[in-house]
Amino acid sequence: MEYQVLIIDGRKFSDLNGFFDEVTTVLTEDQSARKDFDELHRLLAEVKDEIDDKAPVDLIWRHAELSKKRLGSETFTRILDVIQVHPNVNLLLD
Image (cartoon, rainbow, N blue to C red; front, side, top):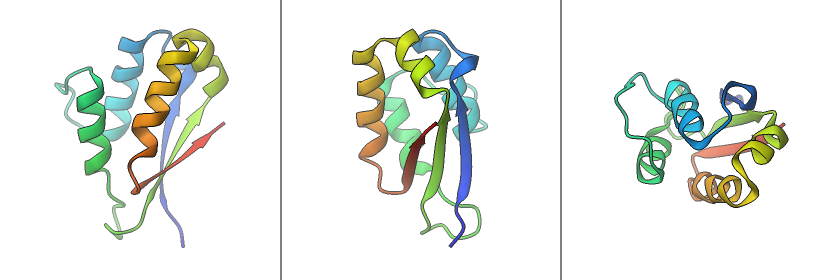
C-alpha cells in the first residue's frame, strides 16, 4: 500500500516558531493557523491521505538531528510526542 508522503525539512527552521511555520506549510493551506502545540494536534488529526482517507500518511522529518540540536532535546521530544499520538501519521526521522 502506498501512502501520501509529507516532508518537513529541518534545514528550513532554527527555532520553534520556524518549526510551526514549516509544519503549517506542509500540513495545510491555512497559513493563519496558530503556532502552538494545540494547533499542531488539530492539524495532525486532520491529515488524511488524498486517495484513501483511512490510509495513514507518511511524515518524513528530514535533517531531524539538526532540528533536535537547534530546538533542544526537550522541545524536540515534545514535538515527537505530539506527532506519535496520531495513528493516521507515520513519522519517519531522517
